[in-house]
Image 1 (cartoon, rainbow, N blue to C red):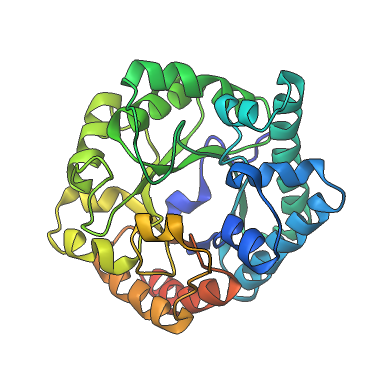
Image 2: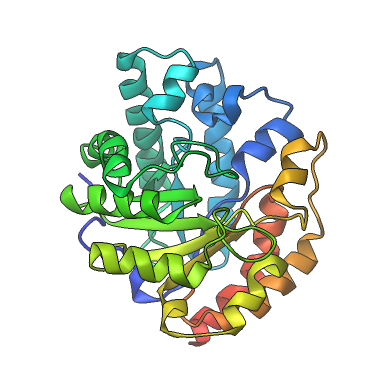
Length: 318
């Protein structure tokens, strides 16, 4: 049974961490080939599940040492049906691997959770298309129909919520939130932003959050920002407004490069972990509701340690 589906502990305001850039860590640091950048493929390989366990435990150690809760994200960002078909999986394998991804996280929770450091299991979802380029934008109805099957799958596991990462457009966000609500699954929508602080469609972040809330009755538990450097979107947050209070989490890139530059690079730009921590400290002042912190492309445990040091003490003090 899901432990926190009816009441997510991060909504109580305590400090929570999550991991860094899983795929960039596996590809650029571990030298592991990931077809279509799909980490779920490790669940099929000898030693893959053990590698993913070690990866998660490295971050769980940081959270426990600092008295923080932790959100475990499943390796299913590219595991919806379109992506698993590209990977050559059968329908049975698609279902089995999505289920294994959640079961492995539930086992980690049983080992690591303490009363002071709750561990939440999240069914991670990605966009139907690319996380940098919206491509052909679906209608909200099409997005709901497409994502409903993976959300239903997570609904039958121990996942406490679904987190949609690198969402590039509002109709897809609306569809995901609607599909999750129909399954009584809490949802989190995390938008990808470009160097100008806008979605890849050109829509301002404020409009995307307000439009999604208006179309869904505000059913998303909260919003996040991921796959952009803090300097790319800080100016948008400075403008303020009630919409800012809907943002509870940040998973920023280590690099200041644009998505186009990152897409074409053959090296890992890990930036400066200490500077990224200071960047997060500035963001924390602009995001009064934020209490979920992790990283995205190019980040690893070093970055999350710095982010933790800069952000979680403020959350506790609040």
